[in-house]
Length: 165
Image 1 (cartoon, rainbow, N blue to C red):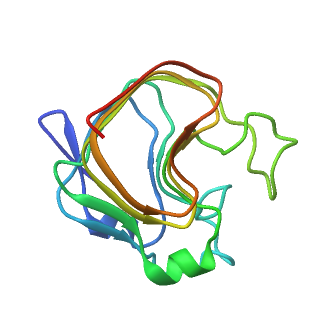
Image 2: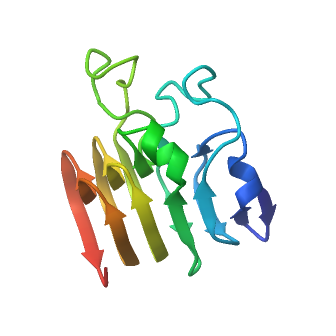
């Protein structure tokens, strides 16, 4: 990821070895269409404690993710291999409690002031946007397509605004 004038650019090369984790407050922007199809084996070389069950993790409060008119999607072989997947995870794990879920998928903190905007989320074997707990979330101008379970699932949500989707 490259930062320029307070905006961090995200490109396809950032996903070659696994998911992208946005762990600092700031503005992040796609600069091209992204197909999440990492080169390394997601089963035998976990990059993150949740494996490769997401393409982007927003792991900090005060984050704006601008898809910038581009498409973010799960690649076909990744989609066939990883059946529990979220294109964008708001949090650093899928469950709040460490006692929940398989292989240490718990322990996420609640995040706030998250904005996801302006693009297409295509192809997901499960969710496009998932959060175990968050507040003050604004999702807008997103076109959701080809998901198998739900476009958005936000648990323990407060002050969520979804518009023009």
